[in-house]
Amino acid sequence: MNDLTIMDWATAERRPATQEDIDKMQNILFALSCRSAPVNDDVPDDADFGFLLAMYPNPMRNDGVFVSELKHIEPYHGITGMQGEAVFPAIPETPYRIGTQLPRKFAKELVRRWNAFSAKGHT
Image 1 (cartoon, rainbow, N blue to C red):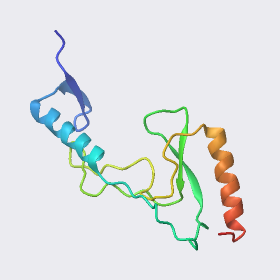
Image 2: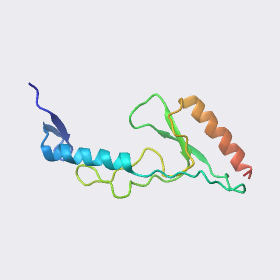
Image 3: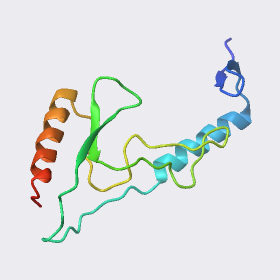
Image 4: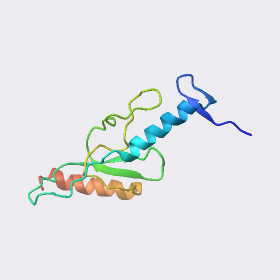
């Protein structure tokens, strides 16, 4: 029977997982799944959509990207990793994002067109 092991980044080696490790991982996953994501369903008619878009890599896959408002990515508030380190989302916390991965070429063209239009001062 194989024992469950985890990568211990503090020592850069694999080691047997403890119950405390499993509890920490479960708490992190629960916190991530229950966090509230910004939603902006009540957009006024005079909303300013002059912001820029950007492509963000999908940290779990390499066959596509995410598209979101161009903003600095901040760590999750109140959620830390196994060693207490900051945990970051794949895209910035903004309601202006596409909620699914897109093919890289399509995303690039979408961002190019949106940003060219926004740069002309259109809202």
